[in-house]
Length: 323
Length: 50
Image (cartoon, rainbow over the protein chains, first blue to last red):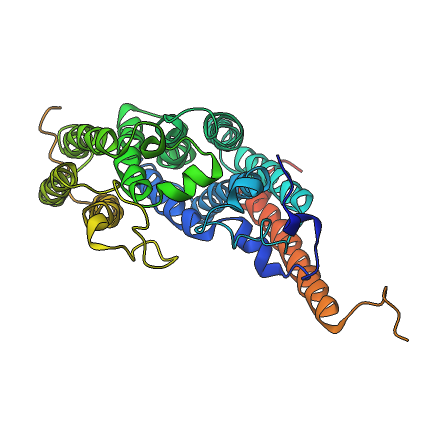
């Protein structure tokens, strides 16, 4: 890793808020939400305090892997508009401090999960942290355009960890939730990278639009969308989701496919300077189809997990169309 | 002439904030371990053979 000028010239004192920022709170909130869904869907009686500890451990573990990612990627973060304001590249926190925070929180979260809940959940949490920090961040991200496809497993595992924490097992339905997030990640992330590819090219990160070009990326987004939408309907057939879930997943899935098809037919990602500000959603007309799919993909995932969560909390009867 | 090694007001405030956050984090961890121990042991504490 090349040290940036900002890293070696630490002037601004690190505030506690900078260390919170190292934990990627926005990513953490999505992880908490999907893990909670897995924990509730397990349908096992669990002490509410232990359930809270399980969610806290998963959140802290996700934060720890975020800190390790920011430590290792400080050199490329400094080159990208979206990430140059992060504490390490901006020089507010030293890389060694980010590393120490990541390692300490990883150990604490895994050990507490093992002692308070069970060692299956702790093992899965440890695997997730290592996979994100080592396999994705240190290895795949700079090596292959399939980086976020394979690395997406780390973001897909929290519902399985939540399920394991509640029940001590990981049945097929838990892995179905994992598969939904896994196959959702490429269309979600590639839609974003279609209009941020200049940043990735500048930083030397082989994101799909940089390596394969925009038309190929749009085609692959469509293929993954055709895979993920039927997968999102599957819980209604496996005894996990009810009628409300089927309705939300089907209606949202149609919109998802429509947006993916419009993106496929567009020329998004073929011209430079598609963003009008540092914000993730401010784009020029040519990139709107990519921005729309990116934004809707977040809403779609949140909606289907929220519906599953609501159904299980309300005690709704699963459809069990196939079982 | 001012001492270049002397901590500025902003540095002092930032360090104090970090120390308080660290202390609260450690206290929370200790409380969590205590509460988890009590929950896991449950009624076995009262019912154990003496």
